[in-house]
Each structure stands twice: as structure tokens, then as C-alpha cells.
Image (cartoon, rainbow, N blue to C red; front, side, top):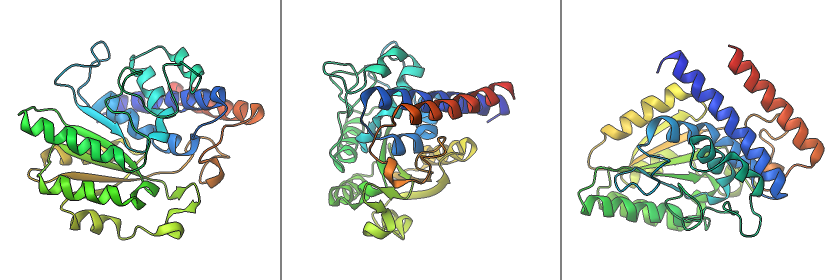
Length: 281
């Protein structure tokens, strides 16, 4: 990936973070921490990795994405808005009654959403079914699904992992947003996941660890995942919860609450300054 492409992705990711904060603030509720941690991953997927067309969201041969950690949708919505699936102004209506963007992804309401999700553990299961359907229909599309690290405590995740390996779903790529925090505290203190890579490997996955804020690392990891045959892939992305907003970073209290007006203005000031710096480089 050349420097210009990385700069473009970094600028877009910053705009996604701004959109995330705008959405959660206007909703007066939501999950900013785990949305911000995943913003770079969403940006890479929708602006570099996946074969999609905002003008034709239901394109039969498109790659599919399922947000298993459905509460992280503020950043997914901001990404879809930047990609052109709907106007950015829709972000201001997040979680409002009858709005296009609800508190968890809804495939019937929102362009670009391939699967409704939110009940933890179920999104990855749906992704497995979509991947198996692709295999049965001899389609070339790939299926991507993002899980939270806290979500991995759900037993259904591991049932899905067993299913994916049994059916040799090499068109499936699971991404773990490993930010280390969940609603009740540190993941390793609530119900430790280590050694996470060995767990996925034992379930038959090809596994990679990456820095989830490094676009070069993403490029290498997703290219490798595409090359894997006969087994599903898992990319464990180490991230920072609340990334980009100083007072939210690594702060468990920002898992599921909206900023007040002063906090909102500080977040926008920080993110807009970061955006200006990126654009000036």
C-alpha cells in the first residue's frame, strides 16, 4: 500500500470517528468505545477490501459483512455514510423512532446492512450460514464478520466456529476487535480468553494477530486470509477502546453511554484537529 492510499484511509477513518460521535451524541445513547476501536477496520473493509457497490447494495456477487458485535454500529453507519450508501445527515437521527439508523443493524431498514444483528454470538452464526450458502451456490463472494472480544464469552460463538471448520468455509473471515474491555471491565478479568489464537486454531481456523489501527498490517492479513484454502480465517485485531478521543481511550465507562455537550465538543475538537493534521501532511 502506498503512502497516498494510507493517507486516504487514515483521513476516512478520522471522518468515521467524527460521524460516530455525532451519531451517539444526537441519539443521547449508544456505544462509542467499541465503535471507535473498530473505525479503522471498518474503513479498511469498506474502502479497500470488500467488493461492494453503494449504488447497488443488493448486488448478488457483492462481498458480505455481518457485524456480530451489533452495538458497534455507530461506526459502521458512519462508514456506510462515507462510502455513499446514504447521506451523512442520517447519522444525526441515530436511534430516533422511525429513522433509517437504529440502535442495532437492521437489514430491512438500512442500505448496506447484510444481516440484522445485536444479540451477541448470533451474528457470526448468521455469517457462517451466508458463507455456506455461497459455497453451495458456487459463488465467489467472501463473508466478513466482526466480533467483540467480550462477545467471545458467548458459547454460540464456538458452536459457529465448529460449524465453520466442519464445512471448510474458506470464504469466511472472522475479525475480532480485541480492545480488552467490555461493559463489566477488563475482558481478561471477567472471563479470560487467553490463549485466544490457540482456541481458534483448535477449532480449525487459520489465525493471525495484527495491530487493528495499522493499515499495512490489515493489507497483509486480509491478503493472507484470501489465500487460505480449506479452512476459515480469523484475524485478531488488537485495538484501543475509544480510539481517537483522549478521555474515552481505554476507559471502560465509555462502553455504553453518550457524551454530554461539553464532552461532545471536546471530542469533535480533538478529532477535527487530527483530521486537519492528516489533510495537511
